[in-house]
Length: 336
Ligand code: ATP
Ligand code: MG
Image (cartoon, rainbow, N blue to C red):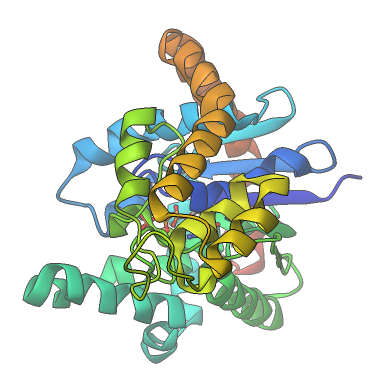
């Protein structure tokens, strides 16, 4: 039997190169070897976007198209919508007894995200909701509902997977061995930095290059990327290790990287030419993805069907898990 892969993405914006190199490129690879479930986590996106349902709805379709454009094949993998699986919400309620508030507040990813909200939105960022602090519990329900064993993610997700493992162990120790403990799978680039030099490129951080960005937008974004501040003149030697342009050259420029590095260090390369080379390479790399995206934008009925059928298939699996969970918890009164 093939092992089950489960992972998700929040419909808060399009796929960016951080997702691609950090996680979703590996989703394309694993679909040939495992039973794969890819969740569009709209319920989780609402935890901090509850006042902007239009944004979440729009991005459900945008992200489904992005996933198809990078090569997720609906004949091999199941793409589904979190809100179409009410069993996840029910499991979340049961699991919420198995984790303390203190533990949720200690979760390093939740802590970082709360701090970011405070930085971005000032005082308003302090009014963190019960739903947001509790999203790791709902994520544990996402994973276990489908018997997720392997979870390909970026590094920021590790504390959330750990939290899920704790919930699974607690559940199994009280109610019996029902749930599977998942394992995170990290890729070659577990955390891609943002254009602003931030430790993480993120949809909510405004520092991303999106896979659907036009060449003109990519041009403007790369031109504004941070370079070594000590390089004043074109022929000053510089330190590529503190330059975001070199950082992205490493992702997109293949064999050219060694020359980029050497010329940057010895001062024979100006930043403008270096940026232009990167822009060309990014545009070339993303072109086939943008073409596929165009196709799906013109075939929205296909996209809708993929999402609907995927959700139907995923729901059957979640229903079985819920049945087992309720039986173990002795709340299976009516043999539904
Ligand atoms: P948001 O700001 O709404 O949380 P996000 O950019 O963090 O958006 P998610 O939907 O939370 O995106 O994450 C989807 C997947 O992409 C996760 O596996 C996450 O670990 C991975 N990921 C997100 N950003 C990066 C990054 N900068 N580097 C590597 N992986 C990333
Ligand atoms: Mg995130």
